[in-house]
Image 1: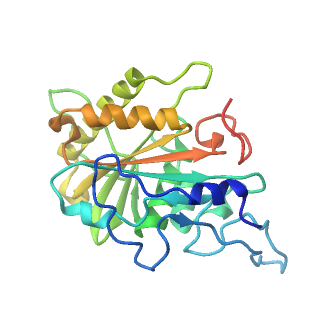
Image 2: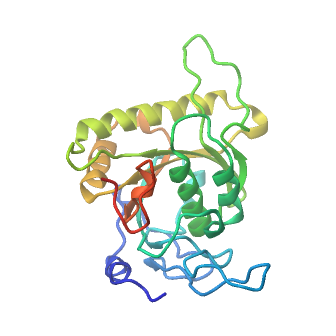
Length: 273
């Protein structure tokens, strides 16, 4: 498959970091961090045939075309301060969100029911982005992570994925800053979402047992429009230090990624209506 005009257009943009953080080094394998297209071509199957060319082809590939900040998290993992990074993943018609299009860790998450809700697609794609950009390795799924019993303060929030990045255990909580276009997405919506998710991250970090204790957590936020992305940026910048703690926020804007937000899934290349 040839690169889409959309993918080439997205790749023409420079890098952007809302909090003014240095963009850091390029990915360890020397790829250009500003445009990271997927690799296409047929894959062999057991019967000697070939699968659709839109399927992922090797361990270094990703479903869709990624642009923006990539391979920059390692230096943040030991800092006591919060940070925020942006990237974009574009999906086009002809690609398919199917098990065979994913990495081995992505397949595990694809096959594993989560602890509630309908967020499997966003959790799978969160892992795929972090694996592709930062070499993340899947350690445990949501229901495998061990926690102490909730205290009298109430609540027992849990994180979605336990990963290893740069030799460190990292928790990842995944969410979607999204509303259908006819309803609009406001800063008040983003405020409610970020306060809840960052608060839950702080609580789960206190409760996780030593066997699974992470060095830090990532809040991975998916957005479907630039307006939603901008709301997340504005609200995050105004939050107090205790709420932000040392959490890394990764905001991934999708184009043609309605399957991350809608049920039933629209085809790749289509938005959520």
